[in-house]
Length: 322
Ligand SMILES: Cc1cc2nc3c(=O)[nH]c(=O)nc-3n(C[C@H](O)[C@H](O)[C@H](O)COP(=O)(O)O)c2cc1C
Image (tube, rainbow, N blue to C red):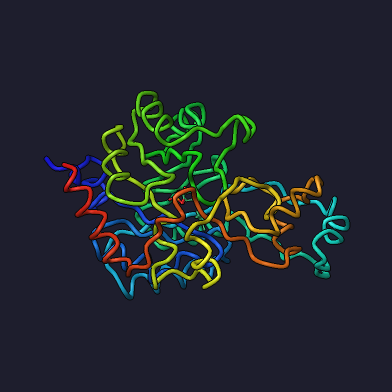
């Protein structure tokens, strides 16, 4: 048996247990997911900010380019934002609020699109959504052992253990975020010991050393986000790609209203220094002079390689380590 051959990899039909993380906001693209799937890993479509029609279109684009395995990812339903603090935040950022904020797509409609397309894997973050009628393989996101146990009780088929290093939003949904910042190296084995479903390690994995380490800790697959941001198939802006080398990242609420790890820019410094509570998620996105550049602590190692070459490099590096 090699490191590649885990029960989860067999169950999902993966040649390598490497999952390209869903990255909402147009960062991960169906093209990126297809390239990863064609290279033997699992590609993910970030459906959270898409309408049901856009989700169906993304799945069709993926299927035109790959007949490999696919995950579609959504956010568990969140409370509707109020407009509290919008005026003071707008005064702080200098961006006038739109006449009306775009409404978030309806979760039930999004899920119906995923189920209707018979996608093999459905992954989610931000809590535990209603899963009735979902016959896909389900993957929930945990940032603590308690969350992993709650997901297992809810019947998920696998758990992503998202460490503190991870780029993007914290998936935290039970304890306050400040008490749910466990590093990948400690979170993964704790979750492996606590649950009986397969565990997917996520957060700070940037090369074959990270892949091999995560599997040695008992994970059956790894989910990498930041590692794929600089791929030509990624939809990240040139500014975002260019900001990764040498980046300091930070977990902050000022960019979106929810704790997320992002590149620490002068804007983040300025908004944090004001000491104001941002408006509810996701309204700060619409009141920002620049889009958030979400990225993990490993940002500086992100490689500008085509996704297939990147997966092959990760595979080669992990194999060298046994
Ligand atoms: C730009 C960006 C966007 C993300 N968007 C999502 C998302 O839509 N859904 C999700 O479950 N996770 C999302 N994540 C988190 C990833 O699933 C994963 O936990 C994280 O990328 C792992 O850490 P790494 O970036 O160090 O690899 C995002 C991460 C990044 C960097």
